[in-house]
Amino acid sequence: MKLNYLLFAALLSQSCLVFSGVYKHVDEHGNTTYSNVPSQGAKPVDLPPIVVVPAIDAGDIDKRMQKRRESAKIKDQREAIENKISEESSRLDEIRNEYKGGTPDRLGSERNYQRYLDRVERLKKEISTREDNLFTLKNELQNLPDIK
Image (tube, rainbow, N blue to C red; front, side):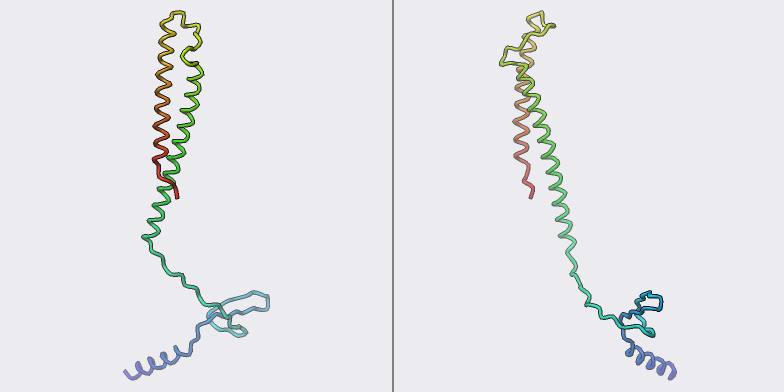
C-alpha cells in the first residue's frame, strides 16, 4: 500500500516539471519538425495566444436564414410578376394594333360580315381582359413586401 502512495507522489511531482510548449527542430537535411516534446537541438517557439471567438446564438442564425429565404422567395415572386406584366403588355399592344380603335382590317376569311363583327367583339373583350390582368398584376407587385 505504501508503494502505491510513493508511486503516486513520484508521478505527481514529475507532472509539475512538465512544460507544455511547441519546439522547432531543423535537421541536417533542412527538414523542419514541430513537436510538443523537446529534443536535442530543438528551440522553443513563442506562439501568440489563442484567440477565442465566443459562440453565437444558433436561434439568431435560424432567424437570419429564414429571413434570407423569405427575401429570396419575394425576389423570385417579384421577377415572375414583372415577367408576366411584360408579356401581358406586349400582347395587349399587339391586340390594340390589330383592333385599330374598333375598325380592324377585314380578313380574307371574313366574307361574311358577321364573322368580322364577331372578331371585333372578341378583340374588344380580349383588350378588356388583358387590361384587367395588367391592373391585377401591378397591384400584386405593389403588395409584395420590400426586400431589405
